[in-house]
Amino acid sequence: MLKFLLFVVVFALATYYVVRLLQQRSAGGGGGRPQVKRPRRPQPPPRMVAPDDDEDFLREIERKRRRNEKRKDPDDPEPTGA
Figure 1 (cartoon, rainbow, N blue to C red):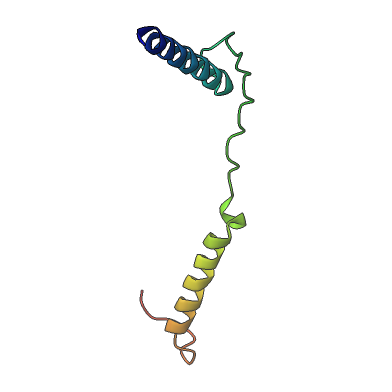
Figure 2 (cartoon, one colour; figure 1 turned 180 degrees about the vertical axis):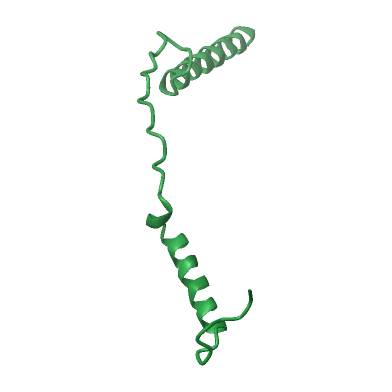
């Protein structure tokens, strides 16, 4: 009975190490030969958008222009405020 129990323990340990080795190899972990990492191409910096190409900027300027036009009195040819 003791021989059978010893056999089961040795078999379990062997199975554990084989499975662990297979998992490390499939995940790229340290099992076997080391994998060479390829260098990545550098990413180009984000493209700068000029204010006159930015739709949000242009929309905001148009909104301010319309707001200023509404404040002006259409009957008053020369705005006072100076």
